[in-house]
Amino acid sequence: MVTYWENPGKNEGTISVGLYEQRIDGTFQPSISTLINGPVELYLPPGSSSVKAEFEYSPSEAGQPLLVLVVDGDYGNDNYMNVEISDIQVSSLSEGGQSGGEFVLIAGSLLILVSLMGAAFYVIRRSAGDSEYYDEEYEEYEE
Image (cartoon, rainbow, N blue to C red; front, side, top):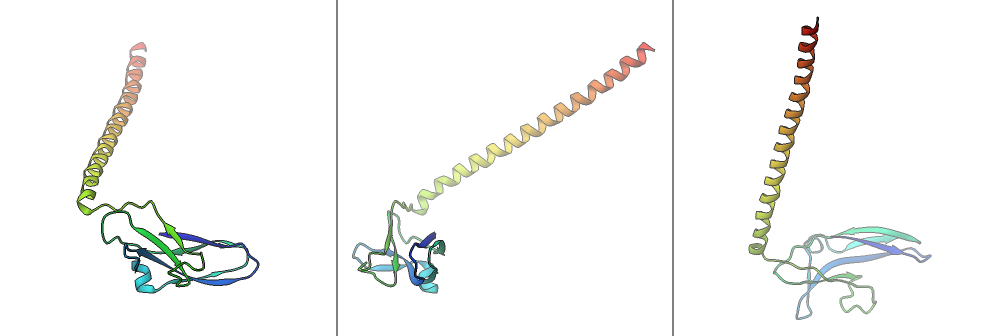
């Protein structure tokens, strides 16, 4: 997951950002990258925009997780800087197996399309060569 941050102000600053999944009981579970590397330290120069921070998230269960970018370790969001990421739907692996059938269908369609294009190219190429051959024969009979 890629996030972009900005500092429209005139002072520089550094913030610490981590990606967490907020559980139903209110606890926070860190994402893979936050768990392994800790929160990302971002330096925001004055007037900066598009300062990139990347996170890796792996869902633990199906459903709709509540992902939160926690800024400076403020889990209670007292600084009003945390960002909630919603509208993410996680499906289980058994549901994901259906998309494998779609992949086979798409790959098969592409294979058939390429084969038809190759056959058409061969026919066009062959017929172009035949017309030149017949023209030469016709010219020989005229002489």
